[in-house]
Length: 224
Ligand code: SAM
View 1 (cartoon, rainbow, N blue to C red):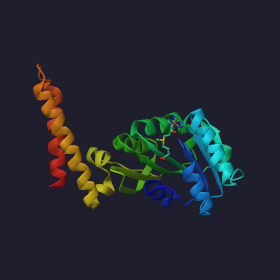
View 2: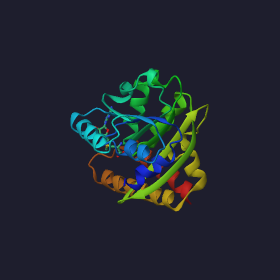
View 3: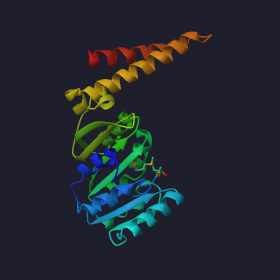
């Protein structure tokens, strides 16, 4: 069994040819292959150790003909001949995910669906998707082991997000689920703490304080 976070990501996979980038142990493609949801996957991983583990796990499951473990940076793991229909990138910061998409954008010309699960920095991801000609079709938020995670699903298309929608997510904003509110309250506490630390400093960094106070108010407005 895989964790709930990866299971949620898996639930959005609706194509047969997958590339999971930063696959680590390859649990996601293994799960999807066993469920019969995919019939080909690339498990891309940049670090030797996890790459070796992914090969071992895939072999143990008897899936070596279905899942190809490749050691590569980002979308270098894919060639256009692989005809990848959906790419998953999960469990990393949003900045890194957006850099991987930017650096590998020549692999996105056929516009595979994207299912992205940034741990932080979601706004980088939404911004990049908009730039690259993607439209967000679904968002989800979930909690596991004390962490709150967002999942962003995008398909080829146009969108025009406001700054607010980039930060908070168009769908998540509309829905304002209890978990979304909880996440924003945690964010408020974080900002409050940073502000209190800044007030203690000898030299007040006015710009920084102003910026944080603005952000604080913005979040408060959204959840009130
Ligand atoms: N995707 C899995 C998940 O969500 O459970 C694993 C997440 S793990 C925290 C992130 C993995 O991404 C690590 O194994 C790391 O080595 C790999 N990684 C980081 N940068 C990468 C890159 N540019 N290309 C491929 N893999 C990368």
